[in-house]
Length: 458
Image (cartoon, rainbow, N blue to C red; front, top):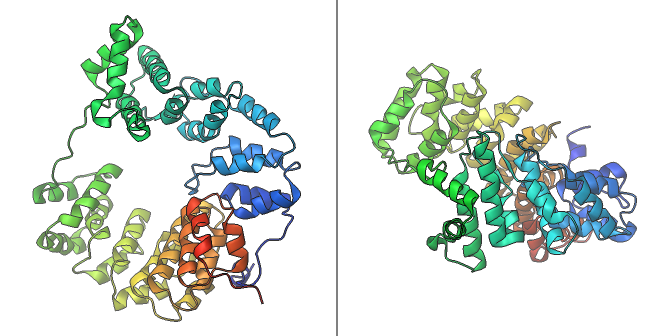
């Protein structure tokens, strides 16, 4: 398929109704409004297996920013017997046995189970409780908020008893503090208690003092060990601490990378100049990666040509961060690199972002000619994010086609919202897209529909 065949027309929808099974399955995976248009006209009686798959399978490994639960449930309402479908869904929601960590699936199922439990569907509440689980590293518990939404105070007491049963078997639960934080936040948001009054701890302590031995043992354990409750302040990233971090051996933890990147927004320019001056002499990959981190948030003061060379480094981390550093710069060498780096590996690695501050009219045709749809949606997420940022930054005539490409091919609902938002600001939302958008799973896509100029097809 040529690059041109991948670009949806402004005048004709890239889909036809009724959708084939494969097209319907793709639309439900991505939350596209065309699935609803199909359901409204043709029903979903012959597509219930596809809807069941989407409700049961967790797709958190894809960049969906998944918020499809209400949307999927609404699609089921076009079925001949929605209650029978939901009863089967509840039955097929496999409970998460102790020792199995799949918090993504638990959260995905919970988003559907919560309203079913509130509507009184048999087994929904029990299945929701059975899904309580830990992540692989024991540092997150799911689906806490969902259990609190259905069972309130009883839900908190159930969670505490369940977590204590894990602890008694020797499991180190690092997320015990999350139990109370999630509950207190839920109370604060629904107006039943102020977050600062710690309603969760007070409730569990009252139950323990009333004679609940399990909760008493749980609280005693927390007071002695406080796993996950003791929050050690990160401390300021002083000049000495930053340089010590830069020279530490080994691959840095993601948290420290994010912390240094944030801290760099307030780092004095003289410190940044000193770090930039070090870059050409750093060769060890882990240290080189660390030295690039501050410049993903602050402008590189010198050494642009050296960082341009790092986009060809063998280490993918270094290539990616080099592109991130350079995309903040308007510079002839960066523009030249952008034009020379439109091969597949470079585009997936971040080269499209180089156009953000180096775009000139006509570049949209160069980018469009190079665009492709990766086999793995996750691989292409960053590339399509870069494309839409280029569009937003230039709003140049001709970039509408790039925005339509992102709308049609991204698996990320937020990127789709950004794409239609850019088209709206350019008064270029096609009629077919405006019609489809009003039924999208993503609220921000739906919200842009009425502020668009809808041009009828020629």
